[in-house]
Image 1 (cartoon, helix red, strand yellow):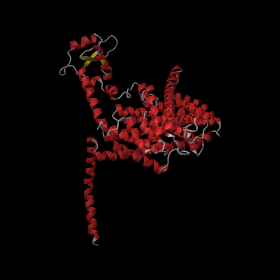
Image 2: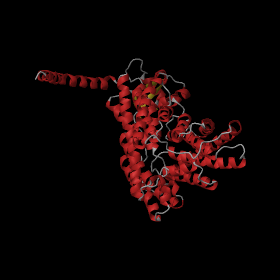
Image 3: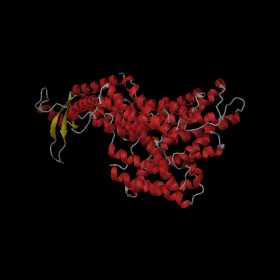
Image 4: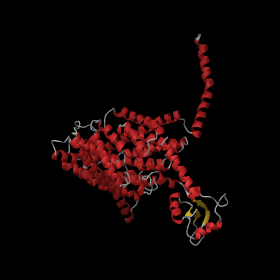
Length: 567
């Protein structure tokens, strides 16, 4: 009896406190949206994003497996390539054709250009759009890549997962009205979680976000990105356990001082192979665009035609279907002879080029791992055959080759080296892998724009590869920097017309990367900013862009970037 009044009192206190707690929560949410998150709030948001991105990566992987089982009629996805040899020819051909048609219709409906979004777009979002990416096109791209990978496309799942995670972080950034620094950090958290959940590689996931996407190692971003990466790994291990993606047949044996030159040479070979892969993709993309335009084909048929080529190729080489982890495992365990390793590598390059050039979707990470393992195995078989007394296992060369090609394609020597270690669990051969990776990235970066992703952006005239000094000018429209007529220290109308008559002016929609070369060429203190009229009509004067104002805006942006990268 004595407990009843006390319980009533406690209940009354709780009921009385309810509106206050609700008010505090509402106030906290308003502060979060108006002033941005505090450090503790930010870490909590990073954890939530890490969990969400981890589940996105997990569901994406499980969805691919489920759809592959449905399409090809097998329960053993890990040995899909072997099972495909028993299927009727029309199944092998029809699957990528139907998948390509579905992808084409999807991208035609939900993207403005029929192009799949991937890691390159995430890098662009980090550099130019305050950590935001396209959400509608991003979701459509993820679905398109899922269909591609499940129906015979020869690419990887990590690129689409990274962009899907970026969509999640962009939604959160918009919800809390995050500024550029916070938006980029949240983007890094999402990317780290997606990579770590895909590979069960928490260290590499965190470093990939910093090295490839944010492209700096600022201290303020490290802790939340690590938190998100750990969350993504936990999601993976809950489903698949604490196991490595690949299992090596034996530990590598390295005769250090004698055998290291062979790994230097392997690195150079892998760098060339990586360049061949990247340029093949770009060449196929150009050919696809040319053929589509020449034949006046609807753009939704382009992936279907690529699917037809892949289906015909898969009749003889079913190992090109999907991600290709079965063939990668065979290479890492030395279960392929030399001629098959070389042949599979050549065919894989062709299949990846057709898939990505056909705008079917998917990423370049897993293909580069497979191609690197095949290249390393072929090199190792030759090296151990020529010098059996001073050579280790050919599987060690396969492991080093896998890291070397992937690092050169991604432009990420640090995180790729760690991914190789975490994928295989073999930490004893680090020196060989690091040597090969360093040589391949050094060579490949001189032959392309740093990496596959940055080269993709460069082909779209987005100059991220050269650093902030190259792309920051493109973020400022001259109309936002100019002095309007009638404002303080504005240019006189006579001076403006004099410059226009001399052919010196800039369009109001242009950016500073267009205006600055004009300043260098004409040596004037300002440029008229105009809106061009119809043919024969005089241009409309919008204002004047002064050189000093352009330099001031550029210097402020450089200072802000430097402050973020060194904070």
